[in-house]
Image (cartoon, rainbow, N blue to C red):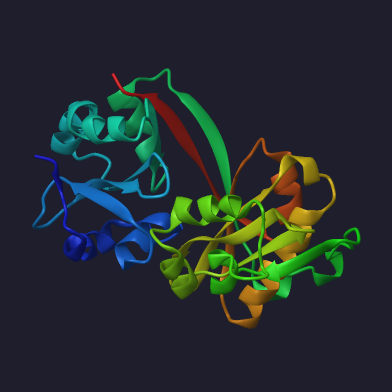
Length: 276
C-alpha cells in the first residue's frame, strides 16, 4: 500500500537516492526545499516517488522492480494524487526516474507512447570556470544581489515589476526567508524594472541548482550570461557548486552554460503524463 510520509520521516528515504542523480530529492529530504514523499512502506521503504514542491514533477526513487509498488502506482496517482492536483489546476505531470532504470518501469506502468524530453545536467568546478568569457553589457543595465530589502521593495528601491521576482522565488521556496537562508541570487535591473534573474531554485548540501530567466523584450543582450557569471563567482568564492538543469533542445541555455565552463554531469528523460 502506498502511503505518504511525514516530513519528520523523510530521512528514511535517504538511502533510496541515487548518489549521482538529481539534487531535488536530496534538497527535499534535507528539508531545505518543500515537497511530499510517497512510499511503499512507511517503516522501511524500498520504492517511492517525490512530488516536487516547485512544480508538477514526480521523481521516482528506490527499487524500480518493486512489483507491489508498481502495480498500485497508476491507480494511486489517478485517484489519490489527482484529487490534490485538481486544486492547483493541473491536468498532467512530469515523471522522472532518479536513475535511468526507472525509464522502463515508467513506460510499463503508464504506457509506451508517452511524450518525452531529454534533459542535460551540468555542474561547474572552480578550475573549469571561464572568467575570461564574462560579457560586456549595454550601459543602463546593472547587476545587483537579491537581498531582503529588494524582495520587500522598500523605500527608494521600487521596481515596477517586483512581482516578477517574487513569483520566481516563490515558485521554488515557501517564503522569502527560506530563500535568503539557503539560497543566493542576482538580478539585472534597467531603470526601475527587473529584467533578468539568476538564483538558487534548489539547494542540497553545497550544491545550488540554478533558475534563470530574462524578460523577452530584453533578450539577446547577453544579460543571462552576465548575471549567471555573477552567480557563479559568488558560488566559487563561498565553496558552493553551481548546478544547471536544462532541456537538450534549449540551445541558448546550453550555449550559456557551456560558455561559462560547466561540464555535462549526466542526462535524463522526463515523461509528460496526463491524468486519466
